Image 1 (cartoon, rainbow, N blue to C red):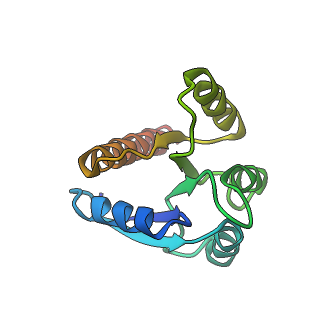
Image 2 (cartoon, rainbow, N blue to C red; image 1 turned 120 degrees about the horizontal axis):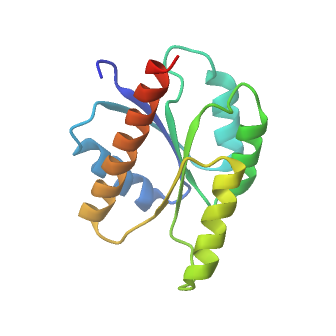
Length: 149
């Protein structure tokens, strides 16, 4: 891939933003990162930047944000023709230990239109590996989609 992937991170926690940015920087994938702090700022950013040359390729969307939750934003994105092709990976740490609840939530997010789900790990290397795996999967999916056109 010649041009960098334009990644948008919607995350209200500054420590998690820094953690994500450092992990992304260490990956052998060319990227450009933009960060927004809440759901309203996310939707404003998408509206202002849709269709430009550096529009977002992949959105990592925190589930729990102020102003508008990640779920509310996901629904808005998938219902809007300008944004609904955007690859959205849900990103969260706010779970109970109940695997059934987590699986139900993942299934619901996928039905709404999420393209992936990452539970924020505590380890930097785990985060880096999860981001890299997710980016590679989405890039491969996009390449296959382009070849089938």
